[in-house]
Image (tube, rainbow, N blue to C red; front, side, top):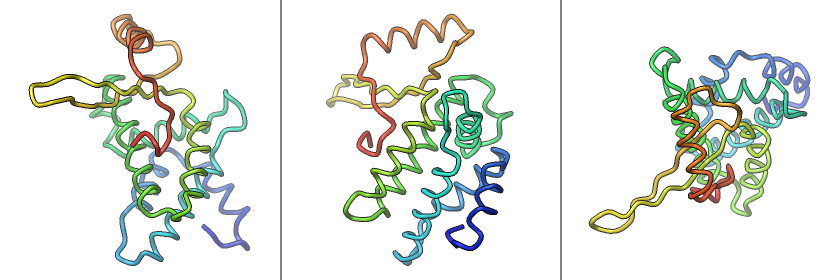
Length: 177
């Protein structure tokens, strides 16, 4: 993937991957390695792929490709019938990618910066909210993900609208984790 002589061929292939395959590729790349050198190569490969599929416009199909790939990283679509379950899967898989980049990226933060920039475009259809709840022993922090576009289910739409008014909306950034 990082080879310069096959870069255009690889880029074309990656851009046309179905989300089912892309999800498996992401999952494979973020498997932690014992050799730090190998993990650095995986970080570079992941960033390269994200760069190739980053949308050029807001209507680009690559956002949908990325969204569905992240949902599928957390299980088959048949087991995730509800929109809320799919959005939670998106958030959970994104979190795994972000944590991998944060853990194994370069120490100066260049890889995190690149990842955050790419995710701003790739995650443009989704919103991340930080929810703090008081519990008996302190505060519990959770993150909730919602789709930004028109939601057909009125109950879910009402929940999202309430969250937008009351909660802390976060960027899709490694700084959120």
